[in-house]
Image (cartoon, rainbow, N blue to C red; front, side, top):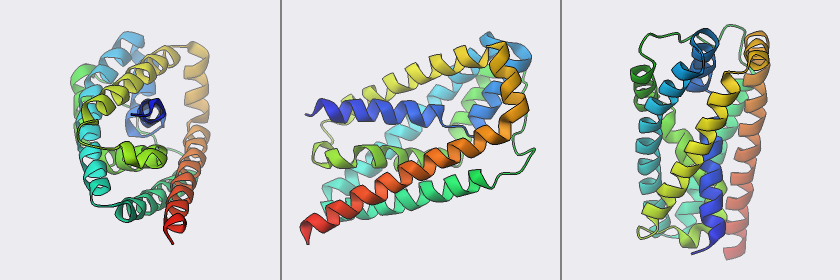
Length: 209
């Protein structure tokens, strides 16, 4: 099994957590008003959803990959287009799109955010597909537990970074003042990963023709 596959899986897990979305914005709003401990409890609860959706994403990715490389490449094209669409939406975000999420029960709030986010499954499929497509031959049911563990390691590292950053006074001020710009920057990142997924899928299809 290629170490590169585990590294890219961990990276995908970290980027999945670090990419601003509803939970990202909720964390920074919560930390701005209640401090790092509340933020840490929020991401601890959200981790439950991250693991659950990622396990389902791996099941879908591996299942498609076992059916043949062409179908996997088609999934890569779909995921690439989806990431580009999400990026375009973020680039066109309007002021006030980020809702504050102060809560007296941050742990339960995090669990609910993690398990009910309607974008969690398609985004996780798209992110992991985009970054692991070049290692498609290593995606198997036998490797699934190690892949999930690698993704979990990425989640933990990203959560630590987020909680630390969310508690910094300058970061809180910048976030509250420039939240729209941050959202648009992550849109650019989504488009970049979508383009990578499309390029990988295109190379895979071309190499078999």
